[in-house]
Amino acid sequence: MRGVWHTERVKSAEEELMAVVPPGSLMRKAAFGVATHALRLLAGRRRVTLLVGAGNNGGDALWAGYFLRRRGVAVSAVLLNPAKAHAEGLAAFRRVGGRIVSEVGSPDLVIDGIVGLSARGPLRPQAAALVDTVTAPILAVDLPSGIDPDTGEISGPHVKAHTTVTFGCLKPVHALADCGEVHLVDIGLRPVDPDFVLLDREDIAWPVPGPSDDKYTQGVTGVAAGSATYPGAAVLSTGAAVLATSGMVRYAGPAADAIRARWPETICTGSTTDAGRVQAWVVGPGMGTGTSSAEVVRFVLDAGVPVIADADAITLLASTPSLWDARDPDAALVLTPHDREFERLAGPVGPDRVAAARKAARRFNAVVLLKGHRTVVAAPDGRALVNSATSSWPATAGSGDVLSGIIGALLASGLDPFLAAGYGAYLHVLAAELGADGAPVPASGLMTAIPDAIRALRRS
Ligand SMILES: NC(=O)C1=CN([C@@H]2O[C@H](COP(=O)(O)OP(=O)(O)OC[C@H]3O[C@@H](n4cnc5c(N)ncnc54)[C@H](O)[C@@H]3O)[C@@H](O)[C@H]2O)[C@@H](O)CC1
Ligand SMILES: [K+]
Image (cartoon, rainbow, N blue to C red; front, side, top):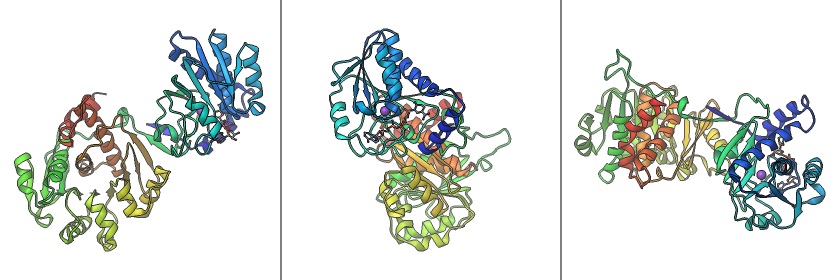
C-alpha cells in the first residue's frame, strides 16, 4: 500500500528534515535522482534542454543539469525568470559549462523544472508558449508543471510528461493525473499517516473459502437488479457476484428467466421479499427508477445487511430522501456513483475528487466509490484510496454492473466495506486488462475474466 501526502504536509516534513541535514543536500539528492533517470532515458544520446522556473523546482533542474554535464551531456537551460533562477544551482550549472539559451532547440530530452509543489493553476502564458515548442520527451521534476499538485486538476496548459521523477513521497497529482511513468527518489523523507493510499497487488487478500466453509458460510450475495427493459444489467451483476467469491447468489427481480438461463447456479425469485437470507445486497443496476424500484431499495436498506447501491438505486436515493429513513444505521452501505450520479446525490464533484468523495462518505455514513479513470474510494471514518485504471478498456457499457456484483460478493464474504470497494475496483481493472488483452472487451468479457484476475492476484 503506497501512501500519498498533500503538499502542505510534504513541505513541513521537508522543513523538519532540512533543519538537520547540510544546506542544499536535499536538493542535490533530488537532482542526482533526476539526472540518473535522465541518463536512462537518453540511452546514450547527448542533448538535454532544461526549462527552469523561479523556484526550487527550477533549482532541481539546474542541479540535474550540473550532474548531466559532468557525465558529458550537452545541457542548455531556458530561464523563465533569469533574475529569480536558483542562485547556487545556476552557478553550479555555469561552472561545468552549461549554456543559457532562449529557445528549446531540438534536444533528445527536455527536463521540466518550471514549477513544483508550490504551483497553482495552469502554466502561465510564457511557460505555456515554451512548452508548446517541445517535441522531445519530457522528464518532469517532481510533477508535470501546470497540473495541480494536490488535486491533479488540469485547468489549462500543462506539461505532458513521459516520466516524472518525484522525491520523498507521492503527492496527490501522481495518483490523480497522468504523470507518465512515476519514479520516487529517496531523499530521506519519512512522513507518516498518508492522506490516502494506492492499493497494490500484494495488498489484496482476496477472500477464499477455508477447509470448513460451505456454500452459506462464505456469504450469500443477493442481487436486486434488472428490469424487463434492462435484463442484461442483472445478468452482468449477478454473474460477477457468482464469479467473484460467493458460495451462493440469490437473484430477486423481473429478470429471473434471463438469469436462470445464464447462471443456473443462482437461486432466483421474482421479488426481494421472498428471496431468503443473504449476507449482502446489490441493488440498482438496470432496475429503473419507478415506484416498485424505490420499494426494493427501501427493502434492502432495511434488511440489516451490507448493501451496495449502484446506478438507479443512487438516483432513487437522490430523488427520494425518505428512502434514507429505511436504512439500518448499523449496516454498511457502499455507494458507487459516476460523476453525474454523484452530482444528483451530493452536488458537483469539483476539482478535488478525493475531498468530494470523503465529504460525501461522512455525510451519508457510507463508503463512496467515485468512478472514473482514477476511482476514488472514501470511508466515513476518513480513510481514502485511489485506484488507477491501467487503460480505458473498463470504460464500456455494462462495466459498472459487473463492478457492483464483485463488490456485493466481497461484502457478503464479510470484508470491511472500504476494502470491499477498493479490492472490487482493483479486480475490475485487472479483469478488464486480462479480458481485453489488447482488443476492446465487452462487459460480459470483463465479467468472464474475473476468475483469471483472481488467479493473477492470488499468484502475486
Ligand atoms: N523543500 C525541499 O526540501 C525540497 C524541494 N525540492 C523542490 O522544490 C520544489 C518546490 O519549490 P518552491 O516551493 O520553491 O516552489 P516551485 O518551484 O514549485 O515554484 C514556485 C514558483 O513558481 C511560480 N509559479 C507558481 N505557479 C505558477 C504557474 N502556474 N506558472 C508559472 N509559475 C508559477 C511562483 O511565483 C513561484 O516563484 C519541489 O517541487 C521540488 O522540486 C527538492 O529540491 C527537494 C527538496
Ligand atoms: K515540474
